[in-house]
Image (cartoon, rainbow, N blue to C red; front, side, top):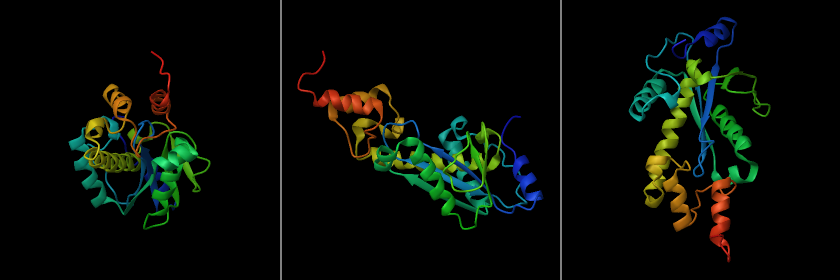
Length: 213
């Protein structure tokens, strides 16, 4: 298989399931910024979308173009997020599920069946099935991946303008060497995930009266 298709969605539509939502999230790994999820429901007459695939395999320009196509083609789409505070309070896995639940709950049509990338999500609160590698197998999941990625990247670029020393416009909050160096020299912002090891360790050393040499 060279890319995502509507094979699973078409089987569900044929079985009488009208509203099949593909769901995916982005932003589990960064040490700064929220986790963002998207849910996409295509109409039963939807065709394949050329060039749409796992957002990680697309350039920023390709994602921006694909996001426009997805929004125009979708019967419904919605976004959800979990904040840095929520990530630190309940952990990143639960926060990712929270973001997905929020996206599904904001759809303008009721999701009758949800397709999710990866492993089962017991706390999702919706009937769902998981597809390993789903963002390169299911067109609905790939579409959700692209929307979530585009929105989160835009957010990190906007935040980065207020904190240019962290270069979020380039690293999107991931723990690059330059990002960690900036944390060490300039301290933390309200947008850093203090529960993440690289951040918590650097914060601990920066507060120490007797730093380790």
